[in-house]
Structures are given as structure tokens and as C-alpha cells.
Length: 165
Image 1 (tube, rainbow, N blue to C red):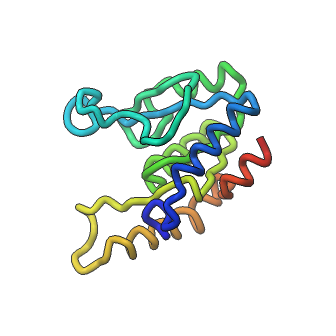
Image 2: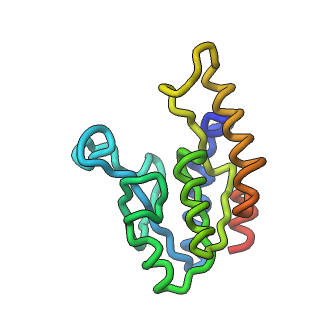
């Protein structure tokens, strides 16, 4: 359940959100985590959209911190376009999506999180001895999306988001 959805459809749901937004004339941006060296460097070849996602973002932002709104220019870009609602989905839902949600709320945005298009993966280096990865992922997902995120955002599913575009 928790490791990128056991049904294996997380990328399909993300694609449906991308396609739905494009059909509704809603701009889609893409945010990549980029570091100077290592696997998150642009030189690594790993900083790309996951296959088979197909999108033509109106803008690509690069971040070096957890939040998509820190040091990226995304907030200014959104404000110049009078955007008041952000849909966050992707990977590292417990850190990147959640941290971005908190900051977006502090900046007066409404936030929507399609839970079924958002993945939680607990860093394996922080897993206490004796814990199973799947159990940790499931626990973190439940705390993030059942308890914490609903305080700051509307947590729903991708079909609901698409229906309200």
C-alpha cells in the first residue's frame, strides 16, 4: 500500500492529472531536486521525468531544499499569474510534498494533495533496527496523509482533482 501504491498505478494517476490540467488550460510546472554532485546532479542523468510520464511543463523549477518554494522562484511565478491553489503530487510525499504544503499555506495558497498520486518512501538509512521498510512506509504515510496534511490541505484522490479542474 505505502510504497508508491501497491497497485502500481501512481505514474498513471500522475499522467491523468497532467493530462486533465492540460485539457483544462491549467499550467503544469515540474520541480526537480538538484544538487551539485551525486545522483541528484544534472550530470548524473537521473534528474529527469520518470518514464513513462509525458508532459510539457510551462516551466521547470530546480530546488536544493525540501520545499518546492524555497529558492526556486516558484512562489513569485505563481503570484504573478494570480494562482491561489496548488496541487502537489509526486514522490517523497512525507518530506517534499508535505514541506511544500506547509510553506504554501504560510504563503496563503490553498493546497490539494491527490494521495493516490503521491508516494511515501522512508529513507532507509533512518529506519530503526528491526523495522520492516513496508511497515515504516505505511506508518509514515498514515501519519502524513491522515493526521498532518489534512490540517493544511485538502487530501483527496486524483479522480476528484480531475473532476474539479
